[in-house]
Length: 328
Image (cartoon, rainbow, N blue to C red; front, side, top):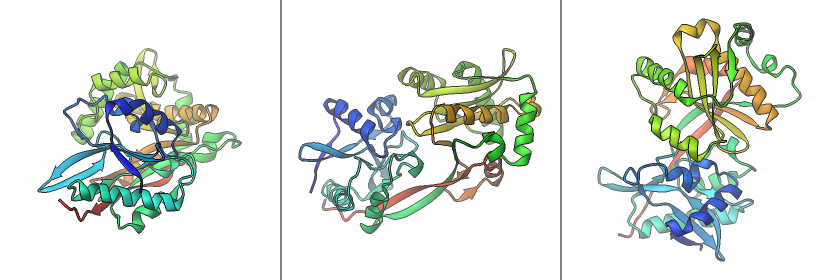
């Protein structure tokens, strides 16, 4: 069995180094990212798993109370997480790791474990032995969401024409002639009112982050959070706020356009630009995120159609649940 330690501040450097070298970690599992949340927002209960005094896995996690049940869940301040493992962790070790997690939760009075793993496209190597270990050990799929992701393959020229649907590519060509220009790493302040207006009027919602939180994250990750924005002169028409979660994937976290510029197809221009930028910078995937709602129980077919027009294909995002026979 492995040794389990509850995360504490003095272990921060070890945690960060491990996530950087892990198979499936992204910057969302770094303490630097997790720490931007106000200290009273979540009850952190992150875990470190060690063997021979070396970290073999970490679990960014928090405690929540659901009805009368105490649950250990993937950290709610991230889009995904779950167990983050070291390179080439064997099937045998993954089975031991999951068994150790279950025993820890049993001994510490948890009723359920809920894990939301990092999607496979973010993994640096094949690691389905971890998913197998979860399922073999009794974890069930609580719900499934579907994201849309484009694989960035070099050698296909011109790339946009090769992957886009005929209609999407025509709109992209129209955007190229519109007089709009794309700015990389544009000022987020220009984009935020457009995003807030889009979410309010189309979904009666607000961004998951406040503007101040995004400014803080941009300070923490100046080279990994980029706004690709389309402008007509100095006027912003649309933007895509991208999180470069690791060196493999460009994650489109926020997407919005100003309705008065829609006829110029500014998002077509931005996405075409991002494809070429990703290819030049050796990224493997462009991730548009999920188009399912309410934990996968509703499907936004229009949004899927929009993303698939750019050449995207489905990638599962799964959430696991385990009922613990706790000893407390």
